Length: 211
Length: 211
Image 1 (tube, chains in turn purple, orange):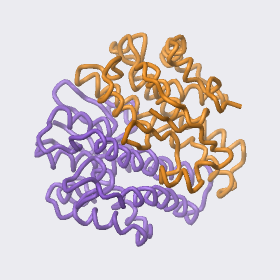
Image 2: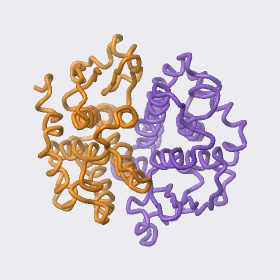
Image 3: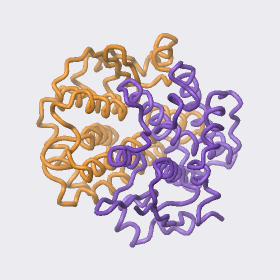
Image 4: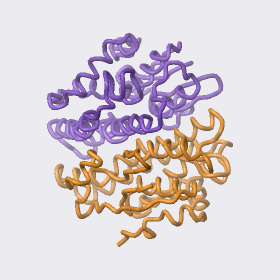
């Protein structure tokens, strides 16, 4: 498998951790978002959205990290990353969706750029925006995590899609000094994830393109 | 089944169409986003995120529309809304993700409110923002739709998750006068969807809370 990514991309980080948890070998192909490689003709031909990550597995090649998690789960069921029961699967996907749909896209590089470059928003306002969506989403997530279905991880005692989305989002939040004291469940779970080799190997600073 | 929704919510619209396509009966429970019902204690107790839609099916109750689509597909496989092959499923989920993660969350009511009320952005700038993310996402989607895997619908000749996300997004784009001339595949597909009873019954104006 080949994974086009960028060391700091939260969405690529999710997929790296999933591949590692499942014990799947892959080649990491860095696409520099800072140098604009994702907007070059060659990359756009591959992925018209110009985003990372982009996954290739034999004749299959596609973008969107949630699509990749579902794909890996269906095709490489060893080390499941979704619970076996329907209620659990819905709960996990709900938590993943809160992060992947309602937090992360708002704090993406392209959006922050639009805020400062097109709307002329100040650095201070940009940071407030960034924190706002994390805190709003994490408040909902923290409430969901007070459910007894939570264990060492977001759901039970092994990592799922929810943890795969949570860890990069917390990494990201810390980089932008977002206060996380109000989220003890989230912090405890992320701490547990970060003890696992699969998550350690997926860390941005452990990628070949890290600067 | 019970679906808490709001007639104009794009995410609720996706799930209404899915339920209709699968021929599943459900009770529609309106939550007025304009009146602030979603921020009331009763609703927040149910769904801490305070968003619609929220689905209840027996003892299962959860938010996030993509989680609902996956749940319905797993539990009510009659009238499949994902292709049977792995490459097709990845393609469909990729297209759904472009809309559900990278267009819709940026143009949500809460985000537009933040832009005008907190950042003091003008109506003109708000509209430009709105159009910008739709056009960016639709440009990628239109490129993907030039693939021979596209048929009468986004993938093949029956509706999938991708169409369920696309139809509400186009409805939304039209409401805000976003120019769509550059997207012939998208327009053709949405036209095909809107001929189906399931999509007609899911239209915002056909909901009990439509005003």
